[in-house]
Length: 156
Image (cartoon, rainbow, N blue to C red):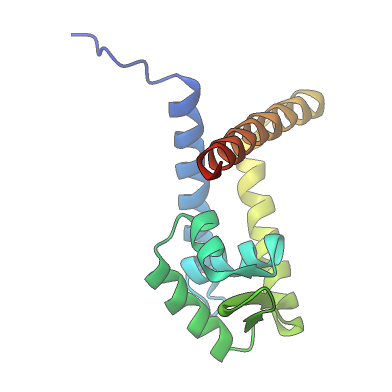
């Protein structure tokens, strides 16, 4: 019996690759015994990449619930790896930023990420890999633009 769902659509393939990347990254973070959980590592790396940012934006970027993000940030703050401060545009909101103490851990996380991406890439030639990454960026930007347009239309 054949399945009526094509599991090789772009959406399924991207979701499969994302799941595989995340699982392998989290396994390697756990195995490395870095003193942070894989979820904390993802939160820290996201703040380093996109911060300073509000806690709810971090939850959105990581796909984690607000309560999970708060717990991760509490532990990262106690470890001196991040700091939270009032957002000057809205004192009720907190901005999260990475501290200098996080640099060695972030370097180790980058190496782990590089290793995982190397597995994903395999022997794909540089030119093809660069084109693939460029197309993924365009696809991401298309979604972000559509989201902005929808929000703007809803606000009007």
